[in-house]
Image (tube, rainbow over all chains, first blue to last red; front, side, top):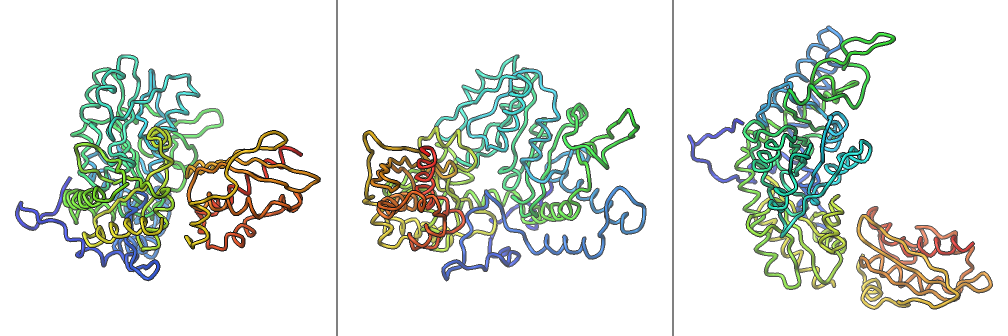
Length: 409
Length: 119
């Protein structure tokens, strides 16, 4: 993945102030204060560059793609094809190994429906509902075994995983980065073990692709799903990556126009990959915006975003450790990509409410990971997730707001 | 949202506990946020005579259970079945954002479920 570096090899740290003006929504206020938006794991803000590119599509290129042959249709087709290439380049894939989807959830569902799995399916308890439920439903419908890989101390239990993955395993599904604990799971190691056992490996990249370099060929993973709206792209965008030989064996989830080779009264032939998995008029404007977001992230520098975010999270964790009665749910030996915690004074929703009154936006609840959160024996956690445009001052405002909870309760 | 009365009812909920015999019971949950409310009612001659509750949840659901358990005693069960979120808003006298409406509503809904089960 290419990253612009103007300093001939030596990168400076990301300065969020260089980018904040690209995001007008950062000027919005709550209760008189500019909102500290720490809910980026849920969705990220969209910069002007992406909004303008989407507008330009509607204003100058608007047409359906891959169907008609007039000028506007040619522009739209070109824009859509080009977007696919940009997204492929972003994760080190071949262009035709990218299937557009409306979000990570749909991408997982496409894979789960389409794949022919022979053997057990494994996923960790920390997997987001969008990752685990499509596999669990497949297992139930097709009579396959499904088993959870346990978590320990805020990380995936690798030893347990090694014992569980065997010759009877058909697929291992792994969140690259947990949206609850913020831990980075050992995808390379798990890929090797899965492949040694002739099992496929599926990665939920929803929380990794936006914030750290991901190269699917280096990782040698078979499939990955990720979202556009979690990396400064528009809502309604996402993608399923698959190795060509894996996608070619998959059957389509949605069927209809735009994905057939031929349709006769008694026979239908699907067309080639990836169009096979994109029935109907796609979200062309969305895809164009998604590609623009990928370019934006590349211009900022994905490694810089990674370092910046983890620097902020380190500051958050250190600050939270000073608060009495506060329990963090973070991995033991790494700086997390999101920070989850509970406070003894108040229910997570009440903590989030007080923070909201101080103009700080976080998420509270089970984070669509009920099996994991109920294992922690809590009704939920509060989760802070900063991104490239957040600042150290905002971390300090967040920590001050957390202390306010003690005053209210 | 956390005015003094709400915090008072959260920290010292009224009518906590259960009832023995002659009671109707129901349990309600908000799985998305983990609020749980178990209610115990005594109904006599079509009116609610006594309410007890066991609530484990956020400040809003707990305070609501406490306040509702005081407000509904003496009311006709028909009147209770007609109550909706507007009544909760007025009774709690706070601004409930879209995501917190179900916290405020949980105890009322659970009581209405208990009454419905019995009828």
